[in-house]
Amino acid sequence: MESTKKLSVKDLATIGIFSAIMIVVFIAFSMVTGASLFFNMIFNAVFTALILGPFFVYMAMKVGKPGVALIYNILQAVLATLFMGPFMFPWFLGGGILAELSMIGTDSYRNVKRITIAWIITSLTRAAHGMIEIWFFKDAFLKTGVSSEQVQIQTQYYTDEKWVLISLALTAVAAVLGCYLGNKMTEKHFKKIGILQ
Image (cartoon, rainbow, N blue to C red; front, side, top):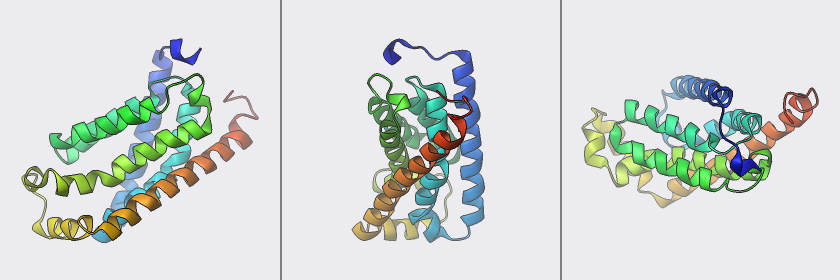
């Protein structure tokens, strides 16, 4: 039974390696697109959900045990704390807990539909973090030294229901597509050669 399985050192190393790769890809992509604040606010999470989806699917299926979604999101929480401040840690941790709760059940980490749900939650947590900064932690956000221009632009778009819905909806769709592509790749390449069961 999956529920009785414990993460081994090898499993933790796999999660750590893939999480590190995903973080590096995310940072690189954000740097390339960083010139456009509008793109980063509305579409960064969309493309991130698509690009990193296949990595998440492979990592989840490779480990195949509870804890993958939670640990990945905790690492995201640590990253958010370093770059944005400790006020964001509970947000990413909460997303990680919800993502992990969505995986409760036998062999859920072998089920691409369940993995996709966890990735949607994870991706929406990332997509909404900028909104949370404005909605609930604006004072703390300002103290991080962010420019007043950025705060003004974030406030403009993140208090507009249209842009909030567009960003979150497209992120969810991209997360589904990313997991679909990831599952196709694992089925075509990794499972056939025996890397994944």
